[in-house]
Length: 353
Image (cartoon, rainbow, N blue to C red):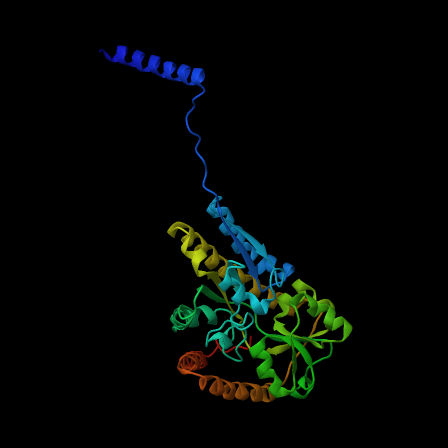
């Protein structure tokens, strides 16, 4: 059979097959796309703040996954209260979370260090440095490997923890009796100076200041105050902060994570890292710009000599936490080693946040 004859035969055979299929009603099987993996994801942040701190990550994952993984984002307390996030993720009620260990009551012995651990950090970049150069990453992995059902993915820093209040704070005496919305461990520390920590749903904090239930917040820096509306109900922000950076992480239900292909896992981790980078510049630029040009909050400060009492109290607090267990001792030692290094390095590492 010549090449020309063979081409003619194949063409005819194709036409016959098509005709036969039409006559018998038989057609080629359709290609059925696999059902996408769907996650329900809840962040610690309310809907306004969440647009900046969590949604960019979710959007990147959904776009890069091209329909293989679809994540629906929920904001603070929409599915479960923030304090129940860990247990809900462990049960599979929700699939993944962006939060700090402290706020979501993670049942691990290092949860006290999540959120704002007093005086452990000065700037947002301290957090990745502590995790990826000083060993906190390995400690977090070790702790969460002992808990069934949840996988810790990655941590990063965000904004400092300043006081934004209705009345000015210009001395430690002004803290006495203040009812502040804050994080569990931060509140535990601040109670030493007369602060009354108040735990309410995130979205209720603004109204609580308006009604007088709260005197203010020790929950964020000035960027969040303006972004979420707290600057509209308070009048002052104190430049002293009890922590230079929030330590927050991304977590996932262990079984749901194992269902992802290595490629999808890589997409998730890449988006998380990109989100860390975005938050670093968003907060760093926002803190400076709003302190310099913001017209809603007056800046106040507690004198440096007086604020040293708070720094000394933080060291005592560290000692107490270190006594809670061997792993806590290791974390506190890392904080001390790092703070010793930056103290010797001098500016800009020791500049007030």
